[in-house]
Image 1: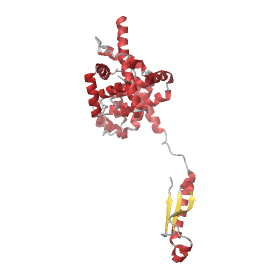
Image 2: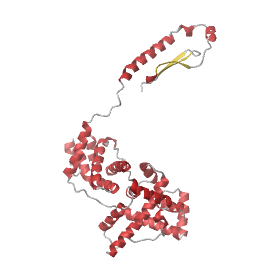
Image 3: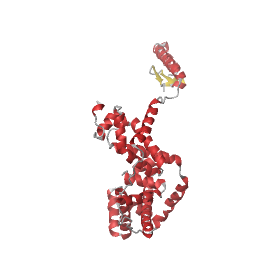
Image 4: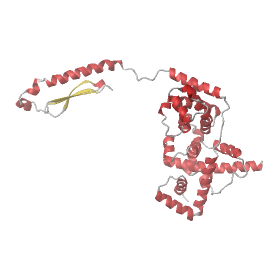
Length: 159
Length: 201
């Protein structure tokens, strides 16, 4: 019996085989004495352990054992909650970047370029949506402009 | 509200709910009820009394901190046992008992002595009292490498499936199967050997 078959016999015992595979192994156990002996040995060991888990008792008194747990709980509660690393610059830059982005958006809406005659836009080769500025890469603020559609998109990510 | 609870007679469910609301006396009662089981699981995995006590207490602290997450899918004792098992696995990983591991890993790869032995069905339990039997099992478990012992404990005592054990131990299902097979065969031989030793003396 090869290693693979031995492990399949064990998996059969542990109900870890798919039904079709389990039927094959069941037939093998019925017909092959070596497989049957292995199955019996594994089964006996499994049952022996399952029914006789060693039992241990703590010698420490209830109060003594609890006192350390109580101290652990209290000291853990005294600790300040873990905070992410402070990014003071982000707190300043993020609102600023947002304000700039908003301003850019408002500007683009009232931008006379977009209201110019089509002929002028043709001359300047209108492009599909493209990035026109990245105001603050550190705070992931990116502005996109599509002159074709006359749309400006501002993506602000303060994370 | 919490003062109405009779802690010693209340069910685990009642105590858990009270503890979730901050009643530490209820939690203390839960600790008193299940501390032996949690300690025993830590000891069975670590095989060191002091480490087992420390880790079991750490598990209770974590239990209190995470109590709000306990939704009652399993029993409270089972939930706490999972916490202590995870702590033990972390501890064992840190310790990296490479010395004993290397021999066992080699055995796994080559098939191991147990795999090549003819299958005999010993009767190591004949005429034994249950307490003696448990002591013998404990003695045999102590002789396994921690990885084989852990697989055996998680499967036979905690009834975890192969895939769950594999995830917890960070290995493949095939490795779990191989380790479990090796551990069972070795346990059978150790139990028979211990029985022979006792008869001889």
